[in-house]
Image (cartoon, rainbow, N blue to C red; front, side, top):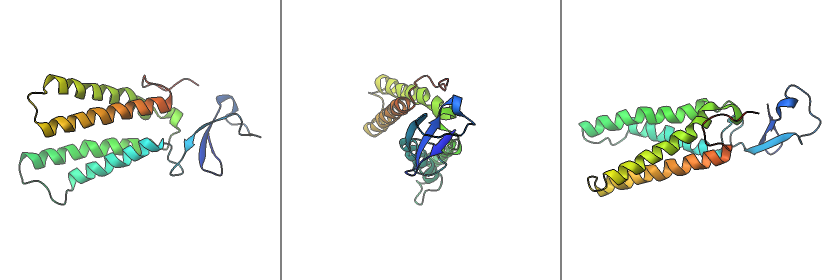
Length: 164
């Protein structure tokens, strides 16, 4: 159960206190400031989710699309799952952080994806051009750092919700 104080700080009530009236907030664990009331996401994940959503929409509806052909099709196809990932974070944001399985599961997935991007960099470093190599390196660093940050924020790396 979440409580909001005057500063908009979200607090999780201990399981033994759920349903009971509280006389003090001392039995609550502080999660962090909520940027948008009712959206229970750590601020870095909220920024990430909004960024993914808008990036995906940009891929879908580019004002200056690439010339017709395979590049245009790939951009459109890439826009759909990118938008879907951002919306998945946002549509599960109504849940308290400690119950949001999607958020918890994203930690090992992002670390694995960063590892796969790193392996691809090592295996095909001579076959890939400079620009794609830098883009793949950016993905590896962004997802790796993002996965580690969210895992640290949640206090778990395994992708499962911690038992209360």
